[in-house]
Length: 186
Image (cartoon, rainbow, N blue to C red):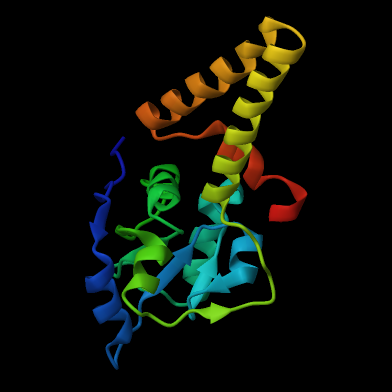
């Protein structure tokens, strides 16, 4: 049995992507893996939306086939900063015939370069900011409860701190994945 040809995942700088996107004959296929709420807040024109938490190789492959996308052309993966795009590439690599290209720095880097984004009606806080707010709040809560009620509550702060270390080492954030599934992000 022959194993499928697994194409390498590559990356492209935000400035190179901007040049390609703005060229007159641009036919880039861009998949945005941010949450629904983030898309409603702002988006890059011409992107298809497949939230990371719902990303399905079969649905993505079907979308590419329906839109007559040439399998020899790369598929660009976009998120807010590049982290979720890298995770998306890991999820679907080997299931698609296309080369996957991660846009480094994501939409944040593109906006810094002056690329035009469509502002929506949503006022969503980015998922990364939600994680920082939730983690910081839990640490403060653990300290307050540990001081005021029982020192055992300091364990909450330690647990969150350990989770942040784990997220940094593994580049996988459980809190982010939980928050992405919350009703306000759908």
